[in-house]
Amino acid sequence: MRKLILAAGLLAFAAPALAQPRHDPRYDRRDDDLQRRIPSGYEIERIGEMLARVTDAMMDIDIGPVADAVDPYRRYERGRRPETLGELASRRDPYARERIREDVMSTTAGLGAAADQVALAAPEIRRSIEDSARRIDRAIRDGRERYHDERYRDERYDRRR
Image: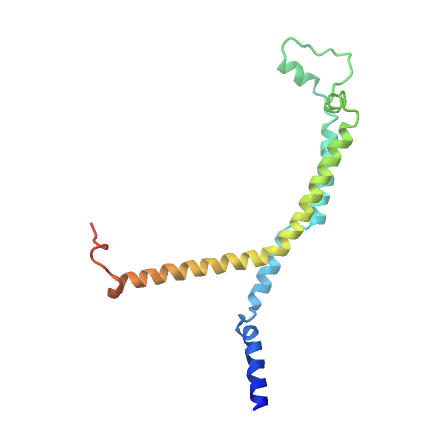
């Protein structure tokens, strides 16, 4: 009798594990494809380095002629040195270039970390969305079946106009 009680207890303990859905190998391929499409944090940080270099190069663009075109009373003198974005930015802040570069790098580092977390969570999010879609479809299908079932119809409320 003890063995029977012990076996019943073990079966009751194992029931939740047995009730779990079986592993579907198709999910592995889809999860790998999904994770492969999301850029890694390292790739995003490399893009951030390129963006920082592009921003630094843009700081050396001569905007004197553009300022002359915008302001008709200001004239560009040919002998004066170029007026760049970097010079304008560092008039009040001598460390403007370094701060802009640091902002770009810290932003892309944060985006890289976020992309890594999204890549980890994406398969579970996809499964949750698919499960919700299946449950919604099932509820709609059950509702339609109930509407056509005479037991659930009430002519007072279902009059068609």
